[in-house]
Image (cartoon, rainbow, N blue to C red; front, side):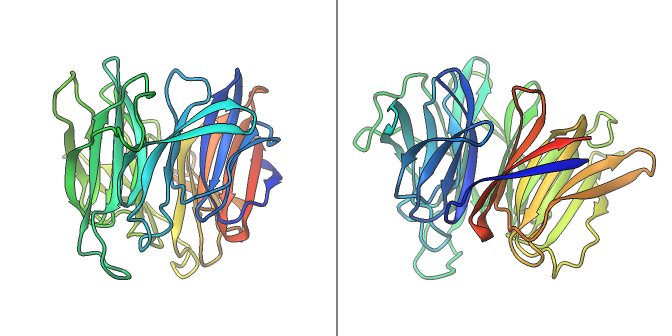
Length: 354
């Protein structure tokens, strides 16, 4: 695997990334964790616009399905100790340098969220790291997940007319991890917290309940489901515990339980604060991209090697402290990963060839 790196921005505390289709072009967004901007780039890394200059605190962004450049984003999540005013906002392009920002819903401590599609409807799932806070490092108020059907037209929502959320699941300590997955032919959410990993399905029909299934009981900061070895069964990859240093892949046994199959062998003193996580197909192989923000601050690609019958890792970059990563295939058909290398304030674009 050959990697070509291009630094496209030096954005202070760069953090969140999302693809965006706007004016017929495939683009991507990058936003900051602190009081810093959100930037729009073409897929080759050319900066096209500044979406906002503040308030920042952006953990998640995702495009509203069927729109031309409209997206949702978290605002004002600055840290686990400073996020009581966090919310999800609607961002709508009105022209270059002119992006309208309205409140969709206030959701204290909302860290991750996603839009799930099932049976012709879109659903919002909002994952809150905790539900209350009174002092630094206060974890007495466990996190929760909330949901709502997301209308196709969001023009009616603002600070005074917010989307109403309903509780899906509470009692989730350090509710940090979210990834979009497929389950039963529809979108589902994979949630990681101290209680383990949960699979959450949106309603099968309008008005029905969400379905919550616990698939693992080991504490997880983030989890992914990937069929690494091509046997038709999804392996479970877990970063453990919250902002932890342990990286493990679990395989389903004959009884349907996830049992350890592989653990990253680097000393955990070198892999502190595992954080970036993205499951994709890279150069034709199911791949898990993982980066960590302390220790050696490296970013790696994990794949299954059928010849040796085990997993292998390759470095994507070193000593960068990647917070989040995003994969896409560009218009030339080449595999690209965008990474927010938060610890060195660097937005990097990596292009891969065999």
